Length: 114
Length: 111
Image (tube, rainbow over the protein chains, first blue to last red):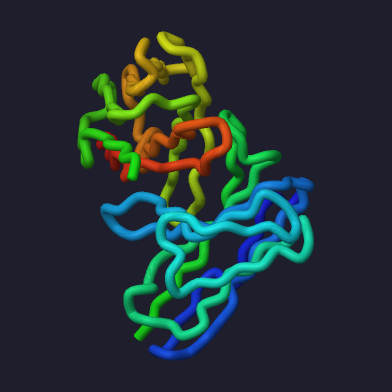
């Protein structure tokens, strides 16, 4: 099993550009989520999904879109990048997302917006 | 917004010393997890606690869940340089709510 994979590992964008961060898991997990990690802020939840076709907003959803057309994939879209979106982005998955479930994290995407 | 506080924010100790880090909230948790994150990688689960008063040991690491289910501690005995990293606590405030992370304790163990 590859676990949770994320691409790209690094990305530099100019303000106003759009891009998609890819996330895939091969563990047949129902629950997937996206976090951003900024210095001194810990991990903050952007969006999550409890299964194919179902998504919901987390703590910091503004400026980001998600979709979940398959169990395996959960892409994160930045429609018009802003410098405030400079961060490290982590995708995670778990079997059900319920209390006590282990979250498996990808290696992260380091995004810089100029 | 339900908040999760971790302390201390930073900790630098010598190899062989003992240390304790804390995770606290004003709200009751249904479960609590501790993760460790190394530079350039995603967090990795260390332990899950679900019962008030529960104590779990993982080699030199001892995890305690408070009786009131509002706090937890992580104690490391005889720290090693390999323990260096960011320690994150994460909770479900109820069974179906998303996982909420604290800001973490950044530990540096010096040889």
